[in-house]
Length: 204
Image (cartoon, rainbow, N blue to C red):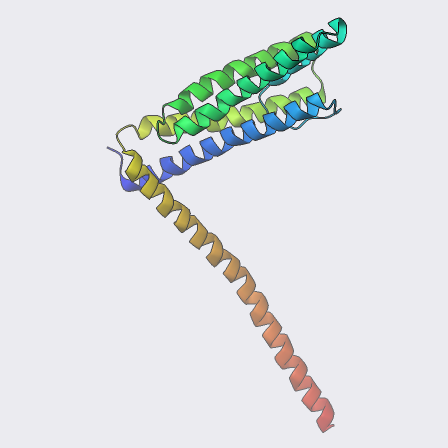
């Protein structure tokens, strides 16, 4: 049986998992636009297959001159990215979709690894793999949280998540105040000391 503490932990894990999935969507979209404008860099934290699709059809367009191929590649790449956005949206209420996202991203990571094996590993390749592993980790954590929360209603999960977020915010606020308070105390002591020294100087 899952108690309230466990529910709070798994609720936060699930939220972090969805946040990482959304980050993948955002950075993949940015990278697709960078490819379209022919930029010579891209961001990490991205799905690989939509980018590979765009690179492939860009090459087809360059070699054949057929604009339709390039447009088709753009549409296909954005549809591929849109799947992750769909998984993110559906997983808010139907939490099992986080498992689907994990399976699809795992396939994406395998394709990326296969491409790196073909073209050779570089420093950038290792960094890409590291960030892919980061996303995989959080999707696995989210899938585990989904499995543990199957008997928890959506409404209860939302309430627990909101309470946990408020508790985190309160903790962070108190920590910030505790950091400020000693500085204020030290400033007051310095001001008092300076005032005392000033009075002694005037007396002399």
